[in-house]
Length: 514
Image (cartoon, rainbow, N blue to C red; front, side, top):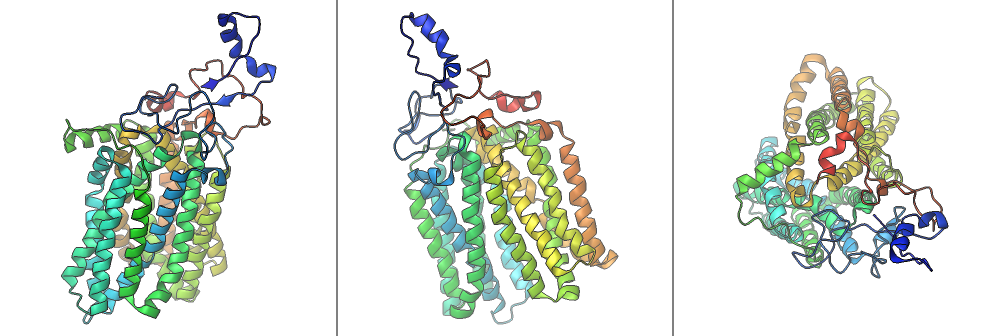
């Protein structure tokens, strides 16, 4: 909706209102005013022109510019540094980045700590990792329900502190040398439960902090911090374990989670919709209705159930086998993974810049690039060529990630977003363990290289199938999310219906209906 301050002399009020709708042709400057959920008291008033679940708070912009320290709400060409002027976004960015940096120490330190135990074997490590993974998957839906009921930032803070306590306890076990496997498995399960609570809440927090038209830029910047922290953490984790031991490296993990929790505590966001009169089962059913009623949503999740399974087989088992036998072993595989990691950084910059009219279609097409390094490994390409293909995969995967997160945050009602995110996570990763289990028998049956080619073919087939869904191809971005071509200070073209700034297609009907 476009807010205009008409100054028409010599006309009555009705004429002034009529002329205000066409003042853009007279060269006046209009400010796009978009209502968003912002910082404010619980149960705040609905902001005019916004979605029903947008509440008015101190940052709400109705007829004027944004408050000092916040980016302009109507500027679709926002730059990253403009977002950092908002204190809440700075806190969220720092909390997320520090959390990922700390978490990068955990897998390396825990794995080598377990394997260094007397009598430990690969089976021992499998028991510990399974103890972490099973509760994470099993409680994901529960985490989504809770995140839609309570303050998401408080839930994330609680999860961070619980995980920190578990990692401090693990650190104490390894430092003192008193580390029974059942105790390690129990603490690993606590970290899995914390993850199940954290991630559904995280998806819902971003649109609570950032207005809809800036979500893509915000998601890209958050991913830039995450990817950079993950690369730095992975590089430092091995050295830390070698230098000070697994126990102290796990303590670094716990300390990072505490810092993240402190930063999250400084965020003051409205709590989730109160659902005191409904049961958990009812909330899950409502979340399922939101999930299953959108073709584009469940089609992509189903696609990714197979994509993740194929990637787990290819990158978890088959790729290292081929790298060891044909490419020179661990150094070659490290080069390939480094190429993929650098690609994720490039992908974030690309995702921030582009604004396609059909973001979900573009994002889905990007998944074809995932087949590139897998195919190159399968045909015996040189390691530097495979690394280049992995770079392309990393870039494409992060473009998909930014556009997918942004689409979900724009199209799903805020009060159900965490539950839908939980269904997304559960569905996308449900076949991942099967990919790991099937990789070795498949390699024995047809050979590792042919197995890699089959994985690439599976990804290509399910991606083509996803593109066959009309909503995946036709779901359009809101008009305010595209990069404008008008010179600064001019009005955007009038759609003819100022009350409906978001053009929709029949396939986007579920989103338009909310």
